[in-house]
Image (cartoon, rainbow, N blue to C red; front, side, top):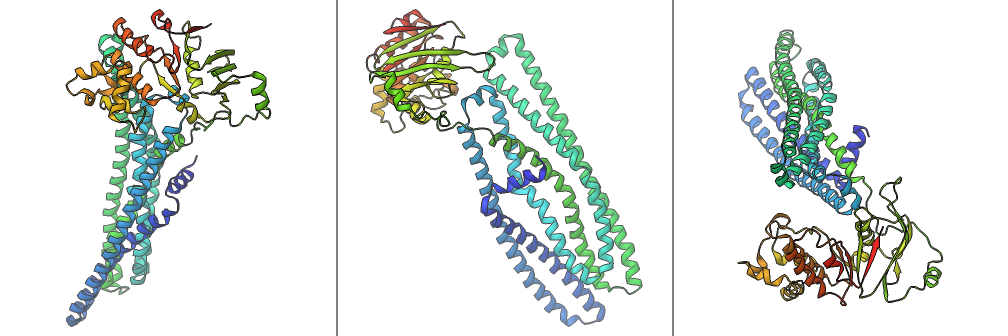
Length: 557
């Protein structure tokens, strides 16, 4: 995608309000330019009046210019408020789009991408793209508008001198444009390096124990240091290019000042212009040249930020999870199929001859069939890699089966959306995620409007109430990041309490006791016993004590 298309997509984020945004930039530029023009005309009129010996007009000239200058500043300030409001609104819309996209992405995206990649997008690329609205675009557009406004009185005062100065500044602008490509390229490298560095930092933080215990941890640290050095190296290159821009701008300012003195003396001596007009042109030329050179400076910076915008748009363009994975499938005789299969009401779940694979060349499930009755407790067992956890992902609607169909409550997944499927199932994974909040709020996630009494009852059923009350703050105890202040068994029982309070007809446990010690396993099994015959329970398990709780065992091969 070329830079122009990226720019248009960036502006489209604002929608119809982009008109107000650009209106703010326009009047900011005009208001500030008019103030500079008023100052220059004041100098011209004062010099001309003094040169002609007519000092009586000077007070009136000063008063008139002060009034006009005040009006121009009011225009500038009002436009600045409008611009800043719309810029912040645009950035807020951008953030909303990115975070909304993050929620809608399919589960497969997170299995294929490192969490550090997303963190890099919201901490670096998103911020850089947001700076387009807050400053970069204005700094590239405002100089153009201000230069146009300054040229009008400069041409009126003396068009020959003005043309000479335009030629000098155009040369400078052309030189600056040669730095656009290297700045764009190095900006992309910095973004990629920041992503890799964030990923490695995330690995270090999440695997701190392994980092300290194994020699590979030192290699991870060295990789981070190496990537950090690469980030520093690329940043230095960008600073070098920006320094070249700044240096060339300052050099041309000096050249232009010398050129003005030579041309101004020549035109004044030959009476092509008055001293007052020359003074006004010189004062205008200072701000004109500054803005002209600013265009050459900030345009490459804007191009660099568009590289980050490209990364954000690539993320936004990722395919989202559909409301129903099977909405493109049409079973015209679905009702007849239902009758032929004679699906009974007591059969809560039927997995009907499904095929599934993560990779086309390796089929994980083929013609797989399973039925679970309402209120039944079933243990799914089998060797590692046979597809037990994949069954849970398919039941939760995280993936789409390739052939066959899954039925729940007498309804095929074809007829219900993913949200309805997940409302029917309470899921307890092997390593439940607890948020860095209180125990009470972590349980309440299962039912956001749950009362404190409901939370306590769920904790009692899950055999969690006793250990919770041993804490000084009870249910208000903070669990720490990922629940690291609690033991594995305590985290698991809170997760079961969360599943209980959801009050879904089906509870799905994926290796819920595999990582626990015997005592913790016993507590969790006691929790599960209290749910048997009350809910339909599917346990993916391999421990004999857990399997023994089930009404029957389904062995996968």
